[in-house]
Image (cartoon, rainbow, N blue to C red; front, side, top):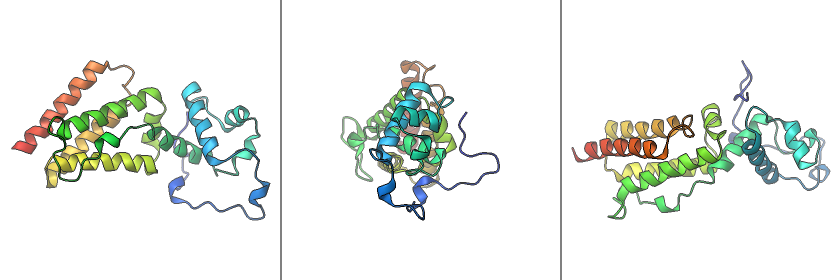
Length: 211
């Protein structure tokens, strides 16, 4: 099973490291036909098809028709590549409908409760489409551009509730725990049960907001 790092190993997120061309190498020497985007997309496809347990750089390279060493022109480690794939999958989230201005109640027919329902259902859909996202989200820091966009959308929705201080913090934590907690059970929990649990969560936040 893939883990964030080997026991005792300390690593820095791929999103926090500027990766220069290795000393003594020129970009023109890199394998032709490859780039980081293509490799990341192939990683997502392989993870979708075979899962985390069977993922390896050799299997990925074979699917791309290159040697495993060719991949290391573009990533330093397998863990870096898995972080890239994780954020690529989160890019499947449709967040355009959730662009509520800070402090706004949103459209009267939906408001922040409708926006939160959309966000939660979108996140659940991504977890169902990519079962490996949930364990990787627990193993790696989610600080790529798509993860940050998701966090920003959630922050806007929480701002729209009107909650402040510790109550807002608690509501935000409850939502995040609900979203991440549904990851392991997404394929076992019927859609209706998920929506009911979400309604209960939102009702609790609404009660706090109107108290």
